Image (cartoon, rainbow, N blue to C red):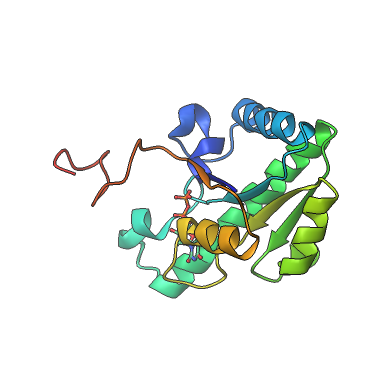
Length: 170
Ligand code: UDP
């Protein structure tokens, strides 16, 4: 299980949106690992597009804001899938939120079957519930899918009680 924050796809890992060279660099590393025969599940965040915590002054109530964050993870997932497939890897997006035109629904046994066939699986849509983050989704899916390890590629270097980029005493 690899947990990527949304920002991992943005310019210099800190910005907004999807930066194509960064997207392709991330995809290329994932493809390299997958080609060694290592089964890879990816949970991708959405903070480069929308994150509840960063938008509390938006006036958008929590459940709507969280829904927007979960949709953002699907956009990132679809972008990463396209980048991986452009490199010759096979990849499926399994979404916790129903968007059948874009991604298949998350079904545990189906994901396991994809992994057995050495397809990369991107779990998008977070947990499908508001009031959670994609870190929770990564932990949940890793347990469900019997992942051997969880790697988290994020924009801080440890575990803090608040955002260390904003609070010096974190
Ligand atoms: N989110 C949610 N439920 C989930 C996962 C995510 O409501 O199960 C929403 C929440 O608003 C969160 C946003 O989606 O802020 C983006 O996810 P996250 O902040 O975890 O992204 P990351 O920090 O990894 O880029």
